[in-house]
Length: 288
Image (tube, rainbow, N blue to C red; front, top):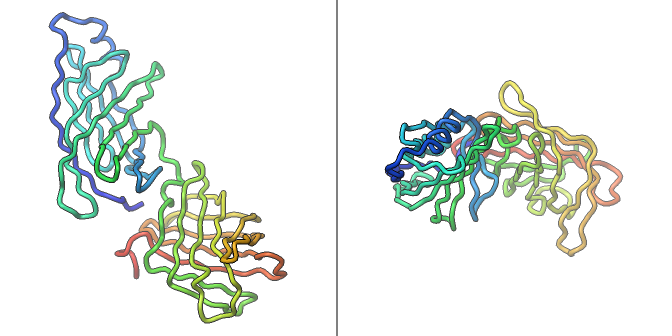
């Protein structure tokens, strides 16, 4: 998905090793050397479980003195650390980050980074930027990027939500959004918001609700969403939630971030199913 922010990193770090030849450190450095491929996840007060880079890599190079050099291409910026001391196959460093968010001018922030490699040659790596946004953690995950991350986002631009019953319109609104969050590697939870803003149809007093466990699959031009029968609970202005009996959900998310979601459901004891169709974009620029 389109990145929430653009990060560029500048780093200068030199750590001193003992003057004496440390054979153990040299062997450790050689043992953890290599290129590790995976993805990067961001965590902060403003977002969580956010895909920062789907094609991240970390290359560790062993030096003759037992230290290592690291090039971590996070997908949101490159961390370059030199002459890091290795202890128990672990290392750490610190420096400054030149960080620019959503087109703003870059500003420098201090950060720390630590990593380790297991005996099974699995790299754990985390960079922490204490400010801004109350702190950002960027974690490297050595694995293939789960498909659910590619559709997880808030679709709030160029939106429309319309409902109908047996082909007859019961209102629509552009004041709506869909929030998709990763639930597992191949499933997501979808929160549909805006039912209380419907106009131009009968008053059904519908509330917002979340559909859990929606399946995500790769398609030629993006991704498909699908789910059979489901249960949920809709919000209510009266404070008493309304049971939702879902019949089906189907949808698509294109590679440029446009979602179309169709849900058939029955609120409360309603005998006939309501069909809700949501369309929206992740980015304002992707609106047609």
